[in-house]
Image (cartoon, rainbow, N blue to C red; front, side):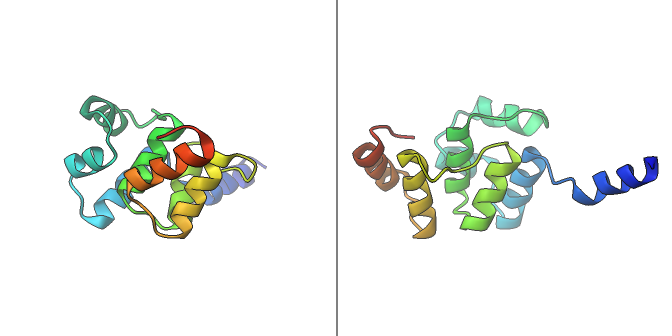
Length: 123
């Protein structure tokens, strides 16, 4: 019985947020500075994410990181999920983000304009 659960855990465990984020960054060939500047997040926060593999940033920060990498819908949702978040279908903020990803809109200024208009907030 112990072996079965170990096998199950090994087969079904996903990458951590930290591992998945940096695998995407490496795959795209970005430098850390490019990513945190494009995501408009503080260098210290980015360093905390890089150095602490168990650290999970806020949902908005994860979304900004996804946008800075121009992730497609599948990879966007995978990274969001690895941080324990998802986009809901009953929340205008989440729906605007989904719309933008589905339509390859990654410019934060345009996204913030849509968010402000339809959800009353910005990233």
